[in-house]
Amino acid sequence: MSINRRQWLQQSLLASTSVLLAGAPIAQGCASERPKEILEKDDLILLNWNENPYGPSESAVKAVNDAMKFANRYPDEVAAELKEKLAKKNNLRTRNFLLTAGSTEVLSLLGQHVALQKGEILTPFPTFPTALRFGERTGATVKKVDLDSNDRIDLDKVLSAISSKTTMVFICNPNNPTGTEVVTEDLKSFCRNVPENVLICVDEAYVEYSNAGLKGSMIGLVDELPNLVICRTFSKAYGLAGLRMGYAVSHKKNIDALSRRHLGAEISTGWPPLVAASATMDDPEFLNQCIERNAEGKKIVYNAYDSWGVKYNPSSTNFIYARDERFEGNLIAKMKERGILITKWPTMTNHIRVSIGKPEHMKLFVETIKGFLV
Image (cartoon, rainbow, N blue to C red):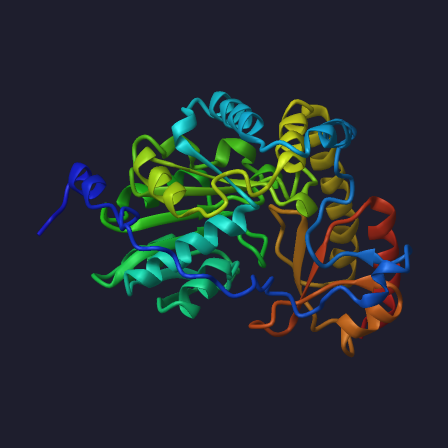
């Protein structure tokens, strides 16, 4: 029996009153971890966790410092102010937003929700694993659709894989770890063609770095599609990874349901992340400079890889995914010995993933890894 949008809203997949189960620690999906000596060594170059090497902005630092005198107060008002700012920027209403401790908190809530329904998460793969892992660990099944030969998401293949068992479709765009991006209009068409009783989660952690930029966001479809949830974060381009500030964007029905289950009640992040996010939003010059410098860093690596014949994915993110057949030995270990941390995705072989640091970092990376060319 078909179900219309109104019925879907009334019987929303997120409208269950059951309590979400506690999840296991979030696994980052990276094979290399920060070594203990990071606390006592300041010359280690971190090119493994896709962090913004330029952040936080000076305005964010000042906002956090100024906010410390209010640390004895709950941040209800500043949370409301940030939601107002996000709503205005995206031509939506505050009821369309849920503030969370990073976008990973949204993904964990959604993954566990599918598990409570004994449902299935359908996803292109490899991709960012948080929603999948939280889902699997609490009882959901995960159905994976391989990327195409160019490491891109095949939306037609994903759409055809939807079945009566599918509870949620997860799309990370741009995709981590491959750095590839889905064409904006193609993704809009895909979202419109997903059955209305299937939840769609689009993770836009890297959207600011993408070729389409913020114009490539699916946020404009939130009012049109009540089964769409967007995950966004201040961890990447905004340089606030250590403060854990993210948010979900969706139809009011979903936001209300997520809010009832969100144990942090939108104040778990506290004053510092809230005011830092707000200040950074008011500093577009900082964001634009970070994006421009990221492009400079990528160009340094592209030029080297091109001259060496290394195959790589042109990146819509702040990292580059490349094949490692032109190099010899264990690159992760060899580069670490020389003070440079890079990584690879544990479920994939024959590649490396390199985050983009400052231009001087990327020049040193190129000079160092050149020594391992076959």
